Length: 125
Image 1 (cartoon, rainbow, N blue to C red):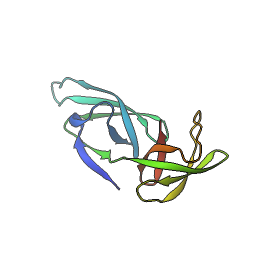
Image 2 (tube, rainbow, N blue to C red; image 1 turned 30 degrees about the vertical axis):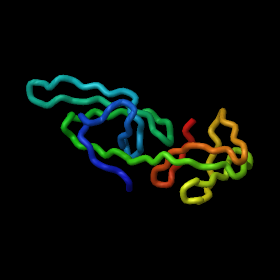
Image 3 (cartoon, rainbow, N blue to C red; image 1 turned 120 degrees about the horizontal axis):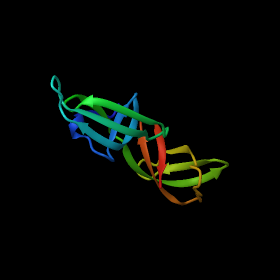
């Protein structure tokens, strides 16, 4: 599992964090002052990278959380059949099938950019 541990205070908007065992991109990050008997708390709101579900996380700023290492890769569309596209990775020449995102039109020989984490892939546009 390609991931690393970081303290909550090291996170920032636009970076990734694991929430409910799913990689999420952070949309909002805010902290509350330390209380009389505790440490400062951070509230993180994010959106799942691969499932688009909204999630939130509230932790002390010195707590450790898992941060997924999501790879950004280049691919080339080989063929299209219905809603699926056959894509070849431009580094490894591995071919795989991806769902064509709504509102996107792929054509054969088109280069695309996609995110990959533990066998899950998503086109970034």
